[in-house]
Image (cartoon, rainbow, N blue to C red; front, side, top):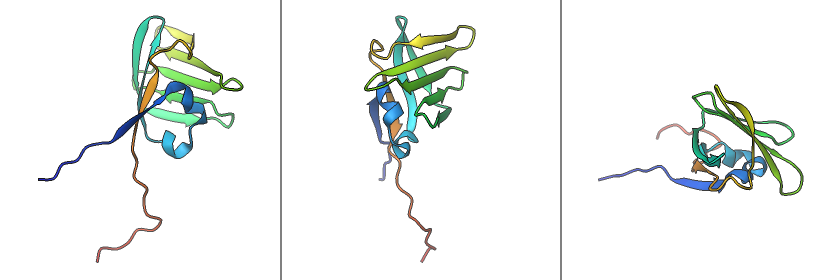
Length: 114
């Protein structure tokens, strides 16, 4: 019998703006607390601006933006349909982390079957 499972690991939400692109590509979902409610965002789209701001979009239209604010500070914005955009306090957002899939590196050149 052969079994397979997806390997996942976690990183803090505040680490996203400084995370290398190859690791950031494996993001699957993020969980955080905002105004006393727990939120779970499945990642449908991800982008990073030249200034290092990370934008995450969920299938339901929710968006999360995280930007470096100087030093180790991170500023965040959370948008929900029918609610609007609100500032997200990263320091008080506990627990606040994201899950990532381990991505295998592809060979530099495809090789034909022997």
